Amino acid sequence: MSGLLERLRGRGWRMTSQRRVVAEVLDGDHVHLTADEVHARAVQRLPEISRATVYNALGELVALGEVIEVSTDGRAKRYDPNAHRPHQHLVCSGCGIIRDVHPTGDPLSGLPAQERFGFEVSKVEVTYRGLCPSCA
Image 1 (tube, one colour):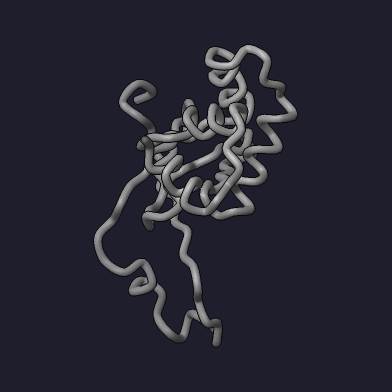
Image 2 (image 1 turned 180 degrees about the vertical axis):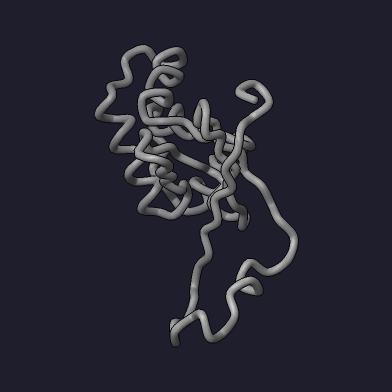
């Protein structure tokens, strides 16, 4: 059983066939699919699944904190199941592919105390941009 499915079962998320298929489609490393891509892959496994059901399941997964909604450069939102391992994103400026990256060190170390303006920083989001090998 996959990591995402295990976490959802552990939380007592009601596992209907539609929800299971959405979770299976999302599970894996470097998965950053749009809702339409999730739907297209889900239909291959469960032809009767509707687009609305996919959107509802994605919304529930985001609300549970099991999936991260990723928005880049005004493109369609993408859904990242890697919500429980701290990471950043590497985005291709050409095709929009997104990869998870795990830089070493504390990302807050680059923000001196005087640049925090009294904020209690609780989260850091860094996006690296460039061209993937295919677009370069």
